[in-house]
Length: 69
Image 1 (cartoon, rainbow, N blue to C red):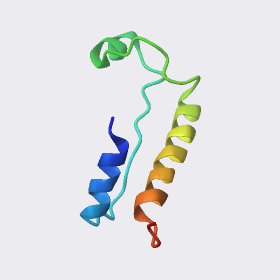
Image 2: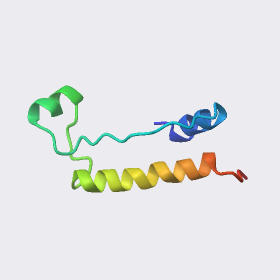
Image 3: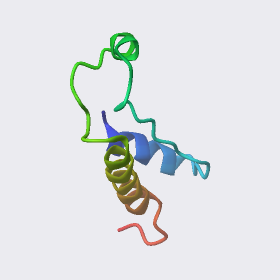
Image 4: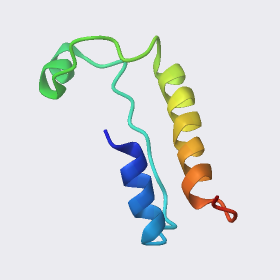
């Protein structure tokens, strides 16, 4: 995904709402088929959310900081 493009566009439109992460780690076989997940995305849902939140925060800091350089 073009995360920089997404966050750049959100910053340009002065978005100030919430963001969410959805974890598809601990899912049933039916859910795997429905979402086309064929491999583990992270060792656990907690790891996925923790690392994902760090990544999202880094983009928020990059595009929404008061002192954009």
